[in-house]
Amino acid sequence: MNARPDATRGLHRILIVGGGAGGLPLATQLGEKLGKRRRAEITLVDRYATHLWKPLLHEVAAGRMDADAHGVDYLALAHWHGFRFRQGAVEKLDRRERWLELAAVQDEDGNEMLPLRRVAFDTLVFAVGSISNDFGIPGVAKHAISLDTVADAERFHRRLVAACVRADAISGQGRRASVEIVIIGAGATGVELAAELRQTTRAHAGYGLDHLDPARDIRLTLIEAAPRILPPLTERIAVAATALLADLDVAVRTGVKVTAIDLDGVHTAGGSRIPADLVVWAAGIQAAPWLAQMDGLEVNRANQLVVDRHLVTTRDPDVFAFGDCAACPWPEAEKPGAIVPPRAQVAHQQATLLVKSMTARLAGKPLPEFHYRDFGSLVSLGAVSAVGTLMGRLIGGSLLIEGLIARWMYMMLYKLHQVSVHGYYRVVLDTLGRFLRRRLEPRVKLH
Image 1 (cartoon, rainbow, N blue to C red):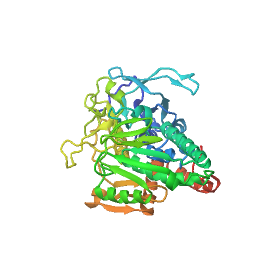
Image 2 (image 1 turned 90 degrees about the horizontal axis):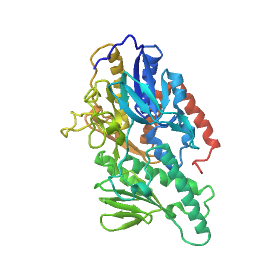
Image 3 (image 1 turned 90 degrees about the vertical axis):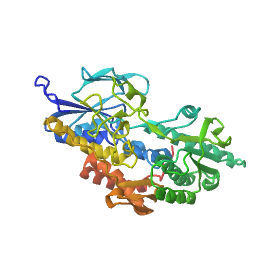
Image 4 (image 1 turned 30 degrees about the vertical axis):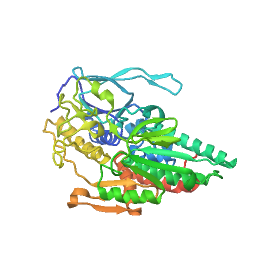
């Protein structure tokens, strides 16, 4: 697991694929620690040119956050923090020759910006996160939107605004109209989106929707196949979140399995049909299928790269993986054979470990093992509320928190992510600037 010294090749080349909640902080910290000091060459690869923290996509979809105002250019971050950035989707991996092939990049008009390229490496780290899993259910790909990317979230928002404007125009003609929104999957993404949509659609009505009553005419339905919402989290959180959703007039239907989605709505195993103008699919995740084509690296049924406790892939000691795209053992869990859960805090903890691992690898020292520490879970329920548990196993149990305190702590998670990328000074200035601009901007994005 140690680095392969080669005096003829210059600096050790660390290539990180994926600039998300784990990959970007890793590139930033390695750039500061190794890149700027000329101890290694750090390169980050991502298919997109800008970064937005994925847990915020539900706010973009609902219209409370403008992705353009919160996104950050990878090239700028690379310049500030001592790493290189290469844009492009992964096409091919050659483990023997140690190169990764990147697809050509086109602009919005279809013109080629960057050609097919190869990027060489000595150490390769995959941090490409996860995507939605539709489980092969008919109509999901065609008639539902999954919030995997900023483009997905913005597309949903545009459709939401258009649906509300249409319904308002129909109501203005004296006819009854409504907007039916169905969210399938009551994990954190589905629950957060439902709560956010209820609050932002109320705000939308104040900007020119004269005939649409948000409480009566915009209907939100949250569907979950499990017996309760938020299945991965504790029952205490689920109970508290269910009560808060009821206060927001979100219809919650648990124990309901979706069998198909079409133009008319959502069909269930019980034979019923739920009408829908907009459908969001948030029912499951998997790693990207192309990971199974990475030159023989071992993957599980969810396409996750199988790694050991050092986050090293099972078939190549020079290839690492972490975050949602990696299946990392979790021996401390109650269930035998469990893997660590796909959470942002896991990716953050693993990124911190890999900074130490890369330093140890360059020095020819043993790699540290990953031990997951559960700091609790928080679920946002709009601009003024959240619910979750605090500290988790650190206190031998959990402390349930909700309301404004929980919401403040949820916002702090984003600030901590920003600090890991920008540093304290930039984050303080950015936060102050956004606070001063709030009085000059509408409460929600209107287009």
